[in-house]
Length: 219
Image (cartoon, rainbow, N blue to C red):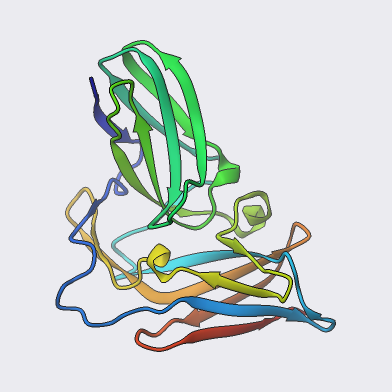
């Protein structure tokens, strides 16, 4: 019992990861760390959203998720189906966004917009037979809606944040459904939300083989 033809409802963003890390690539990306401060000192609870960049830029545009992400799948079995969402290479589940008793046939499911921010996700459908077809999803969201979505991390009591570099996929090669290749670059954009307001946008570069610490001063 398994799902056949788990499909993606947009043109170029059905992806195949081509080999994870390139064995010939010696670069190692260290954690992305930083602190958010204002005129009063460290800012606790600032929400950190990120935007990845891709090279070459004319090959690929991420999926807009302002209204969530809808996809369809065909089931050959009946029973309980579960949809799980992860940040790319994260070590914990972000959300069990869907649970339902379904008959065989075609079904459409939506990942809620509030779960999706900028970045790379993996989602899966767990079937009654235990199979878990999964799909990569590269997302983009309007800046004005970031305050309504799940951040990649939040600052602690000292205003500090930490991002696992594996979740950012720097330097990895990907292949689109039409065999166009692109690479996730080491350029990054921080979008800082405080009290449900986007208060700061800052573009940075995260070079490999060195520590990366960014102080972000709020206006």
